[in-house]
Amino acid sequence: MSQMQRDLFHILPQLIVLLSAVGGLILEMLRKPKATLWLISAGMAAALAVSVSRTGMVTTAFSETFRVDALNHWAVIILGSGNILFMLLARSELKKTPREGTVYSLLTFSALGAMLLAGSGDLMFIVLGILMVGLSGFALAAYPKTRHATEGAMKYFIYGSITGAVMLFGLTYWVGISGSTLIADIAKSEPPLWAMAVGFVALLTGTGYAASIFPFHFWTPDTLQGAPVSVAAYLSVTPKIGAVFALAQVARDLPVELFNWQLIIGISAALSMTFGNVLALLQNNVVRLLAYSTVAQAGYFLLAVVAIPFSTIATEALIVFGLAYLLMNTGAFAIVLSRGRSIDELRGLARSFPLTAVALTVFLLSLTGIPPLAGFAGKFLLFASAIDAGFTWLALIAIINSVISLAVYLRIIAPAFFHKNELLKTSSEKITTKAVWLFCLLGTIIAGIFVRLIIP
Image (cartoon, rainbow, N blue to C red; front, side, top):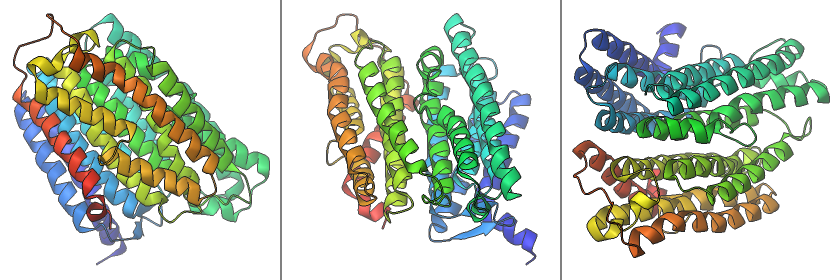
């Protein structure tokens, strides 16, 4: 087998996803959206199967520019599963609308971009991944022809353009000084402090925008509120996991003795958690509340990025929390899609739809970090990794913010169980939406209880 064949074999899951997205576009041109959905779902399932069979493989491809490791494998598993869920939600919400099949293809191209981010061993893969995620997101956010959707998409586009330009400008310092775009070569060149600082802040700007990290998150609430709920669910999950995994790949090769980048990440984490939770307390629109919640959740992800150089469980924490975040956040958005966007619309939910109310409660408590749910397992590992790396102060801030987040989510849970609402939607929900949140409900519970079987 030649080197090229080996490299293509190593990126087989990503190739399958790419071919699925392209095939979906071809079927959309033939006006067969249902066939597009089935083709892409089958392709995602195949990519998942390949990645599951390779979870122990650690190697590189294309001259070390792409890393085939645990983060890469699990990104395919998490994001591939998520893509199927988001397409099912989109099918429920956007069925028989113009360009329905295009939505499925754009979701898949974005998932591919996030997968490339997760395996980045080269700065150019990070740039490519951010562009793929951003360009797909711009179009998806603007899908409805409404004022709010257009406004949100424009904010997403403008922030993406500016942060992308800043990232490219700053990374040129790393490339110019090291003479290479490989992440591993940056530290070897021992660049001066100012160059390290400029490059890292620029990188954090670009990835922070995609991951909704404070202070690069300002597009998030308006964009998610204006977009279809299925697209809002995707925007809150796929770009975030890809960008955070990319930051983790860079953090592995950035020695702290050259530049204390950990402190910058730690401060960003603390600000994201606090700002997101406090602003979420003030929201009455559930989508907007979950948008600020996703800013806070980005801060929790960063605990593991801080700990990457010193903690052996940091990578495991990222993977577990990434899986948990997909399940609990997607499940919450699925219920919002079926039952209403405002807190008032969810009042009295338990009286008419007890199982739905219980599921919503499980998702929100999991986001808080209540045992034995998946969110608790993920946060426990995140806190442990931060403490293991000597960032006890950051873990304490995260714990305090988890308490604040409980108050945030109780603003939804309490009215759902203890208030009456004659305006509650009583129409039956679409089977695909119900299937999504039922799957997420079972996954949130099972992943929390049997987490050690998932990540040995």
